[in-house]
Amino acid sequence: MNKFFVGCVSALAGVVTATAITGSKMNKIACEKNTEKEKFRMMYHAVEKWMRLKQSGKNLSSYFEAYGYKKIAIYGVGDLGKLLINELEDTSITIEYAIDKNVESNEKIKVVKPDGDLSRVDAIVVTAIAYFDDINEDISKKVQCPIISLEDIIYEVV
Image (tube, rainbow, N blue to C red):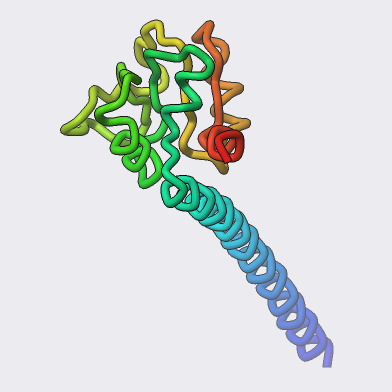
């Protein structure tokens, strides 16, 4: 009887432990999915506003011209970064370089790592809008220029 009781308690303890571990892993996955969902929601709204600007004949270069930013750097060469590079082609704005920790090179622009040499520019535009606060905190220690979210630029030009 005593062995049976110990066996039942051990089995029950194993089930409780396994359930707790599984629940913890599922919660972590759910949090990661929510973070990813929020990132894409932010990107969708920014691109939607940007498209409306384009349809009304506006270009983001007007923002940089209004503030006197002639030479900029772009932080992030993902989808939004590539779109911004294309948007600013054939304008008076010069993209000196891009900053990205995941990209080794880009055929249109020099790419440096965030911990690399960030040469002087008039402003840095962060295209990784979901991570702006973290990026701003990291690179503001290394540069003396304004660090601007692409999302803020889009909403200001509207």
